[in-house]
Image 1 (cartoon, one colour):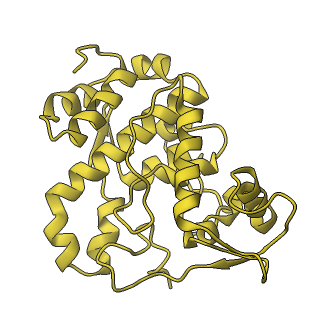
Image 2: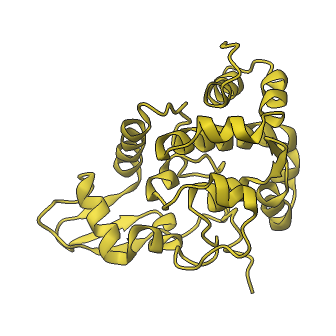
Length: 245
């Protein structure tokens, strides 16, 4: 394990330690105690922010899941929703929730219930300082939500984060998208519908599928979205879409 105090190294080491079932407490303490100026220097570009927040999210999602797995499986929808909205991720003197990282920092302050079209209201000064300037829809294929269509958890590096994200997307689409040649219909996971504004609407989704060879490049298929399997223990919309009025 690296002994460096560099925030990017710490986030990568934390996720690796969680994946290998090591002692994560010293790394969590270092991330919590980071000076904000140090964090700002370390993740001063798009690649750094992507890698850092993806690693932090996936590490803490697993840590919290390990602590509360029984409650999540035996509790109701509200208990599962709380998993993502409670402030339990200390970074640089600030307590964040998993939703803060996903929707505030990685999606550039977008509302979780707005289908990718509505802004997240009243972002904190920390969020405004450290969020990505623009939403990169590829993050939807790199975050572990504890649900059915989650990708393998990878440790991301600033130097290779774009290539690593492309690999995650290719795996995800190959496993989860089907294309009916005769009907010219692509069946895609529900997250495409839930965050369709992040992709630029239906046309953007089709262009995305073409770019990653999930559908033939010379076709314009209709989109069919998979239904949620509500019999699965954790396969619910953890962002709250299923519990809004």
